[in-house]
Length: 320
Image (cartoon, helix red, strand yellow):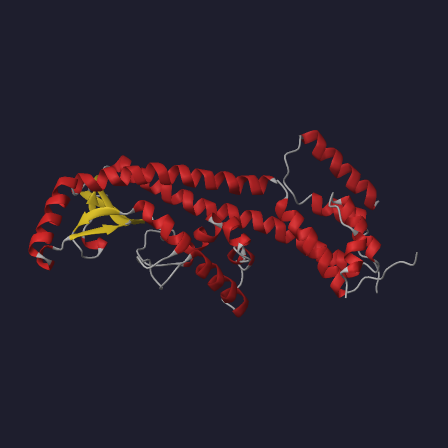
């Protein structure tokens, strides 16, 4: 049979199929990301239970019940109980350089889009956490939850904005700041963490006292959220590096058989007949075997030290 020449459509199909395979592989970077999400769930469980304890210590449920009774009896003048999912927690167990007691406080938002640095305002960091946490759900809705990681070195642009907006819409985010108007997944997530507080003014005006140890637990929970964003970025970075090399190789290949060979070397099964059936020059920079070895080397899979040394030797022998 005559060799089938590569064209743009075939290159794109090969690239997309191999990229999907890269994302589906059980690499160490992916495992780190998934494990960190489990840690976030564990931290949310313990931190939210602690928040309930701390908040109810300042606003006892029996007082909340009395005030609600007064509201029912006297109306809006007694409307002083509200539900909230973000709180200023503060402790006074540290001293400054002069030995005076100082207050340490920060804003902790249990909502899906809560800021990761203590600010009470909405931020891109909160959105990055949300898309990482609900990555699979967003992928199933034909959204791109990896857009922030893929565009980490780029400023805002129409492509990035388009995909971010689609993700926020899919999650049910409404408005520019954290509010009670979210729907869908965002609302279901937020509803788990609302607590009764007394005083309807902004949360910054009602710092809630806690101990230093309790404050540290809240910090660990918030750090865990930030670590999920970092692990997501690391995983996607590893995929981007592989895809960059893949693009170079596919661009140089003249024949479809070279792309199929590359996929085989990478352990990816492709049906050449299907590629051709659905299908509407230059010097090869990397032969398929070498490119496959290079891309494999970019994955931090669980391997013994001996296996890694052997793989490296095979790669060096193939290019000599």
